[in-house]
Image (cartoon, rainbow, N blue to C red; front, side, top):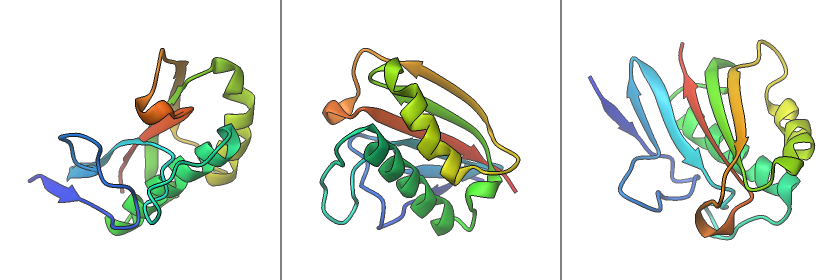
Length: 123
């Protein structure tokens, strides 16, 4: 059975998709670095990575999960040269039994973001 998950603390979807869908596992759509309360985007790769991961956290908690339940992430970067700075922040959120991950540079991200992160979580 498919269940739609939405956290009022994370930014609303910017298109025709759900923040997350639970169907055996929890599939979280890519999270842009937008503050759900203000609608503003953080500045700089560190702050944007932190906001994207905070948004993932809001959705995880809404569904009864936490970061330790994340099994896979995808990190999209506007500039692969930001990999080290993004990785340093990412390591603050995933400290043990890290999820599988792919990270790559893309031509552009919505709203001019520097990073977007999606996740899959399972109990």
